[in-house]
Image 1 (cartoon, one colour):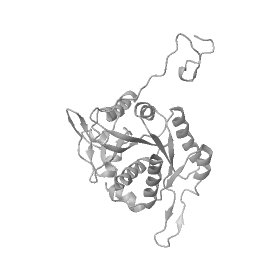
Image 2 (tube, rainbow, N blue to C red):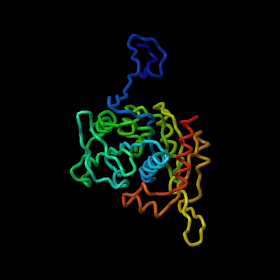
Image 3 (cartoon, rainbow, N blue to C red):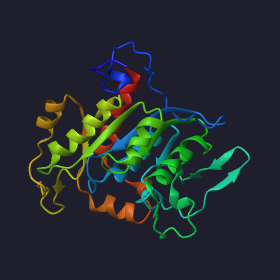
Image 4 (cartoon, rainbow, N blue to C red):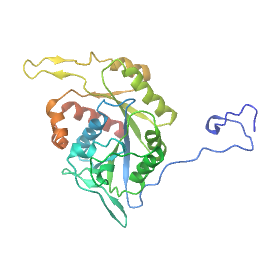
Length: 278
């Protein structure tokens, strides 16, 4: 072993006898499944509406004629089923676990679809959480999916790391909000993606503004956006800004996100689509 060994063979050029090539930790997809593109939705902190953005992107791409799916990797805080109004339990077959399909044809897999009561807390340690995420990829029957959106828990812990290592992501979308912490939030997500060699497709700013229904004036409850500066700092594209929309929030709470009409979300989806068509 070389004296200057850092024990990180992936970044070392020494040809020592103990050298080990980095292992491929990607989980194999179910042999009966087919998924063309996988997009992770991430954030450096919670509370920015990451699950809402995940759901909206799946809905918008579905409206554009693609077969979409959502893999809910936020195991301890699953909210995807509620947004789509799903209360059924996932069943299995000899080919794998069958996801629940929404009214408009979006396939959903979440831990809430496996629990006896959807309000039961998930009190599991890291290895079990990570194993569940791997199962959602390798043991679920994902049939002819064009775009899969993976709703990841916030931060850089066990589950986000498992998704980055185990699922072949085609890229990630970073979700943020227009608060002072935005630079730090985006920075954490950017650096993790770079360390894991996963492409960054762009950033979406949620809760960007609010338009008064009486006077039509646009307000910025969290302050003026600093997104351009942050995007330039980290060299990433802005996919869109989503407004605070009480009607959309009510639709999510009532399980009717598939009925939501948000032009800014549609525009963000169209920008994302062009990245894969280039």
